[in-house]
Image (tube, rainbow, N blue to C red; front, side, top):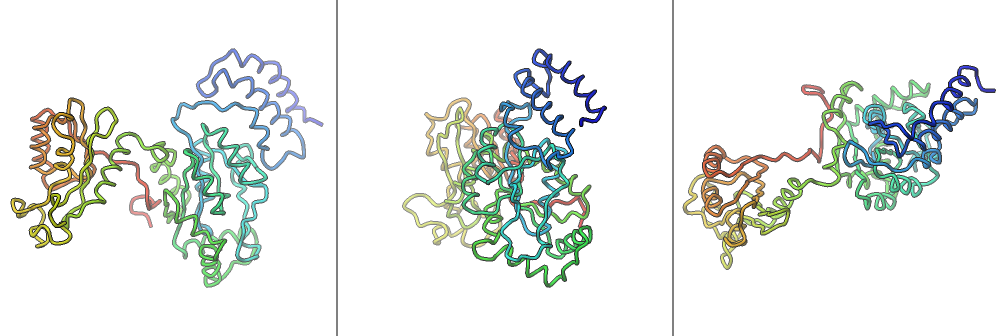
Amino acid sequence: MVPRPHLIFLVCWFWWAPGLPTRTSRSCPPTTSKSLYYLTCTILLCTCQPSFPRAVPSECWAILPATSTQYGRIMLLGLCGGICSGKNAVAEYLTQYQNFRLLELKNSDFPHVDGDPRLRYKNDTVPRASRLEFETAESLLDFATKRWQEHWVTTHIWDATILDRFLQRPFFLLVSVDAPVSLRWKRFVARCQRRQLEPPRLEEFVLWNDKQLYEKDVGRAVLTDRAQLRLFNSSSSLDELHTALRALNLADEQRLRPNWDQYFMELASLAAQRSNCMKRRVGCVLVREHRVISTGYNGTPRHLKNCNEGGCPRCNSGEGGGLGLSTCLCLHAEENALLEAGRERIREGVILYCDTCPCLTCTVKIAQVGISEVVYSQGYNMDKDSAAILEAAGIRLRQFSPPRNGLIYLEESGGT
């Protein structure tokens, strides 16, 4: 029997809502209004029943067409980590504040190395309407692939083979969450107390942790080691965690597909790996109309012994930065890139990307050949002098800071 308040609301909804396809809304494009209408009716009918399911079935959402969004490229975030590292808290934040939906497996019993019931945990803090369930990881991935233009997050990835398939998708980002083992044990003790279970001793928890991460075939380390982003969750409260996540902005589309600045700066950093200079690795890329003209890295000229093999006495003498430059035999990355390109290939609109701000000598050459813009990542001890020359020559200089990846500490400034 449908409760009277629900019945009144349903009658009003069925009477008014069919006009939705003619209306426009920033949050609901007209092309999706009719499907949204039928979906909402289905959910409303379900919620009126005593047997309303724990989460809205994925089949209900399947009737909605995939639509574009105003918030840029969307993603599927995979969260992995150790026991009580905070991955479920991160997923809860994303569903509450960044319009993500949680994708779960109906059989959510992870392959544990220990059968202790205290290790089995189901995240019930995410609202029912923000969770979808699937029979298999393959069906979960297929669903997200068809609806890749929306926000999704899952904590149900624990198999390396499945992870390989997820990583093939251009919209997938694997994020690992970790925390000090002593802090994770305290969190686990608090969880056991809420569930009215006897908490483990610290030594017992450490053994569980070691098995869960490093046990052959089921250890999570094989997943966390492949994470594109690593979060160290030493937050002491949810408010502190949320503040850190808000500043981090996990949904930044550059984490999935780099913009042009990030792309070319990464190429410059890759070129720097070829450097043989004993003092500093530097890489450079020349670009025109988003096409690479040439690359360069620092080191001794061709046919000379490499710097790291003793080819440059100055670099191998251990002198400080900026000293004895007139005796240095190493060509700088910018010089090599300019020489490789040649004057005839450097025209108006060429941008020089370098992972280190050019020195004074390279700056003069950059001005002479007609580079239009210089983009660098790291500073150098001649930045002000180089900037003054480039400004006088009418060349734009800017520093590019890509979004933070690698290990990131999720804590407020001064937090523990």
